Length: 188
Image (cartoon, rainbow, N blue to C red):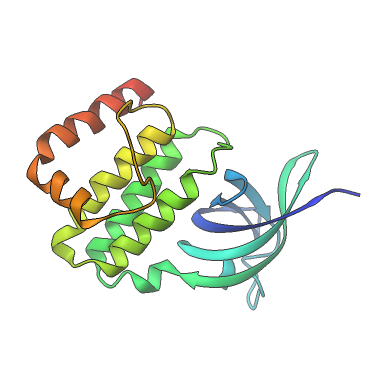
């Protein structure tokens, strides 16, 4: 019998597999970034479909088998997609999660990625749109730092405080240069 892992996760991407299944890429609070096979999730009336929508935060039960992770259950908690009020915020969330998926080729056991992504989505949904560019820059810097691609200090890794956002707004070009150096160091 296989051990079941219960954790909270945010769905970053879905990839169709076969007629009714999908690979779900999620960042979890206890396992980091994982790719999970969810069987029959694309069938009409699938019970787990809402819990596995893109940018859904859910409590999931995972089983690690010979062929990788499989989903054993999921309970929907929060829809970050619905909380992101405008198309610009959704595009920013998509860009950041897409960059994270490109930077991590397989799985990443670093649990610090979950609070970074959750803090980023909370900041996008709660702060006014004039702060969104700074929120995106800070999120990318924190992802790069978590993956070891930016050597700067990152205090309060999950907090997106007004002081931090003001510092980014004041010197945006140097922060973008750091992002570019980090992405270059990754080999993308």
